[in-house]
Image 1 (cartoon, rainbow, N blue to C red):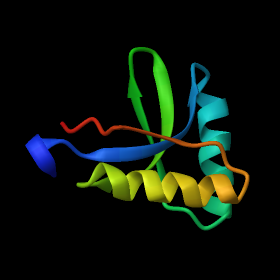
Image 2 (image 1 turned 180 degrees about the vertical axis):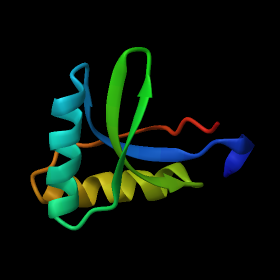
Image 3 (image 1 turned 90 degrees about the vertical axis):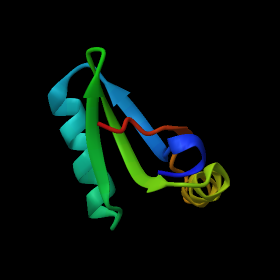
Length: 79
């Protein structure tokens, strides 16, 4: 973990329907991204990365945005 034990992820979507989350995950993987799904609070979130430094996550989100992919930085749930 990074500063204060926090890791950051880049999120590209959140879905209540599992099939929608899986379709979004498949689309990201088809584009060559190592995406994954986390689940909490009834939502399945499609995320990428585990960054120790928030700015690194922000830079990655900007890279995705430049390719037309909506993304934002969020705290990564560490279990």
